[in-house]
Image (cartoon, one colour):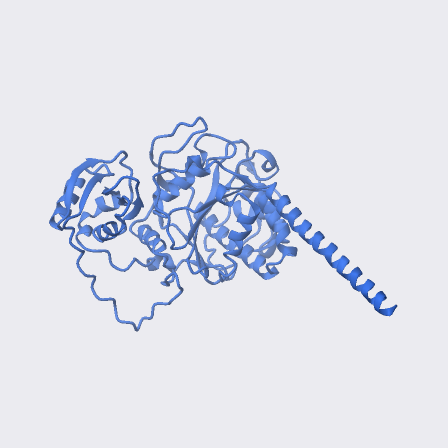
Length: 485
């Protein structure tokens, strides 16, 4: 009898365990269903076909902050209008070792070239030159904005392929800060309603008291958006504050621990308010992507601002510092001089020997196209290639003259020849093509200094010291580096 009673107890325990297992599985199913139902994606049919080739050297994630007042966003922010606008944007490069990350903030007033973008009608715009960066997101004048156009613009500017694009709106930002229980920030002075909205023409109520404090919801949104009446009132100063805020948010999430109890409210808030590319359009894809970055250390997460200078009321890109920054990331080098594997360059190591001469192009045919408005550029490049033994099959003007970086297109079986050809065009992007053969499309960086093609590419450029020295680490003191307010 005892044995039978014992077997009965065993069966009861097994039944309870089985029931718990079913409930657990059902719970996971409910979790995925719950998150999947909230995720919105944008149409990636507007992503340009003329883009940098995919690379194994890290991943690039474009994060866009939208200030549309449509839908749930009407309760947040100030102003009116239902056209999606880009209030802030940064490109996060996750290095291949998954231990380092570099985020580049792009000022919204930066003057850039916006390449052809798709309209809601299905038509494509023409390239627009020397226009504000945030205008790309508004192409088409829709409430949800045009993230594909902003992605095209960033790829054209940086030469980096954007693997994923994420749009965060007012409501999403506010809800995520509430989900983590607030984010610690540093306020340099008392701030009033009139500082947030100068059109009030009155001081209004005090919104923030000077000092370190936690903010969430509307107050967190006010903190990252305020510009007037604090520091120099510039968008650059606001970017510095936003970088410090994102770093503090990362620190808060890491400090709470990566467990379901803390992550689910954040995931729920995020998926309900994010718009992502189809590559992140499901709960398992989002979670898998997020977990791939869990080993990135706070100190190894760096924030920099695109090298800039004022041009009147707008912001101009400072070259060659910006190009060196982009080249370093394309080579998967970090801001502080490390490679993708995290190996620190030792100052005691002897300099690399001078690069050897480019391989002869004997027996290799190549076509040369001018992708700029500089006349005679294709002919000059053709002469250089002929001197190197190449057979130039012809020169022509490219379909568009808005290429920033030189592009080498190569057909099936021609990758080795493309690699050798790239030695003569430092910084060139390699792009596979369906048609056989090699084609060089010259960009404006080559037009600025065609003599550089006479020498082979050396070790990838490091980030200029004037950029690296201003980088913020995610573990920096929240009050440091806020000289603009």
